[in-house]
Image (spheres, helix red, strand yellow):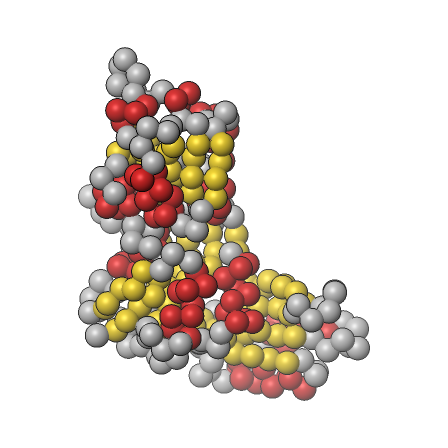
Length: 291
């Protein structure tokens, strides 16, 4: 039985994990904080962790990338994308008007994870500009807090699964500002996992440039460019060692076991750059259900 750590039951991470492991027998271990998710796998209590790493609207989740780079040594074993559909959740009887429609003026506080909240800002500005916004550790935690505080005018932004788990109502479905709101997830852990077949593979590298090499980043990118290696993403993050020092996370649409990629890495290392392989793994696309 595979043990998988992730954010709380009813979160988008929970839905995404169940989508990835549809055909695999797993034991899900839920944690309130992303740090506990990482540490569960790093300490050997679970085999893998499910990590949300990027969102269509909000971009990279920098905190989670920093954990992968600075705090743990857990290779990336898979990547997949899952839709983030957020809903306004509460008790209908608490906010219903005479026509049984939600009276937004009765909602005094809205709770959610900061990334989920940011995905719904236009909706909040239009319907709930008066409400206090409170960030919590996950959307599932937000819904749980609302359940525990009836009659106070609190609502949450979260998933339909979280609403059902906490026996609360959907006050408004799909309150995200864009229909194409997807989250990219990573599965991290020590051992490669035998997944269902995927035609696409990726490799993620952490590259730290030498301090005394002007034009080093240009040389690094040139090592990929002249080999016609496609980069799907490049992001800079501080090394946390010295002001102005950055490393780069580069994602490549290619497996590490090809001929071209190891040669490019060797050329980059010859420039004096430090190269860390974060993982070479299958990439899964979300299959939109058909009616």
